[in-house]
Length: 102
Image (tube, rainbow, N blue to C red; front, side, top):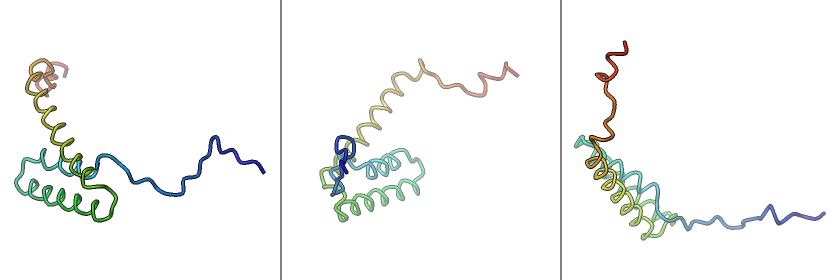
């Protein structure tokens, strides 16, 4: 039997070289977005826990976790600055805008 290795390649080892840590990035983004002090504290603890766990499980290198934090912070700051800059141009619709349609 001839196997078609051109289309089906067997991977013997799961590749764990994922750059950057998406779990850490998401937890840190939630921390930045939260306005409630309780939620901010919760998401800060979640960020520290997730960061520690992915390093201890050897799912990511420490630089991957650090890059996830940097990526999340940078993304949040960029969106915040764009929102401030283009707030008037791309005004979100409110219920007042649709009151004449009733």
